[in-house]
Image (cartoon, rainbow, N blue to C red):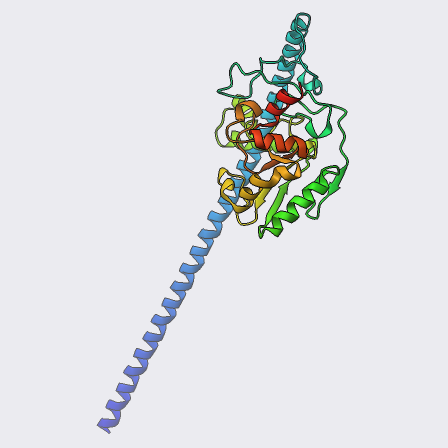
Length: 317
């Protein structure tokens, strides 16, 4: 009997120990679950706060941009009025040299407006050719108000002037035939598209810290003012290598650009903005921007290392 009582006591002690262990594990599980739930709750709260702050910042950005546009519009109206008065005062004693390409140039006097730092004293010619393929469009020569273009749409929703399409197609086919893979990433643009690109650039510059009164000039260094972009002509294309589709200086080192720089003139296209001509073109070096000028002009420009401005001044004036 004593042995039976002792065994029963041992069983009771073991059972009690199992209950305590079970209770301890239950508390541990409960503690772990509670901790996870609290962590998730805090995480969701932080995410909610971050989303709220982003929405608030976006709203402030939109409000700031709207105010900026209004201020710039008022400033632009004032500047336009001042420019008009200055033009009227100077018109009586000024002799125009060359045709004015559109009313946006009405306040520009030859040799007085420059395209950026380092070009002081340089005379910028006016558009001086009536040939459709040699029309001059740059910061000093706007697209004529009555300019119209008939477009040929490409397979990737790009479009070009129908008159240069055959030569473009031949150039792209031959480039592909050389084992390369060129991609047209930009071609004809509407005036509205150009306006949107410029506004977006100004907006991003302002958000990045550029003063409001400097953003417009800074944006114009890389995005042409509406009415002064060759893309609106339907004669300009941005062509990149499929292996490197960035619009950066390094584009010049790609096989596609090497081929185009050597052969594009054969098809009437030229690299429009060379690295050493920015003081004449008013545009930074763009080793991806090609412009159709016709095979005759392209051959001369290639052989004599001329940009369009130089060619027109030498052969069309």
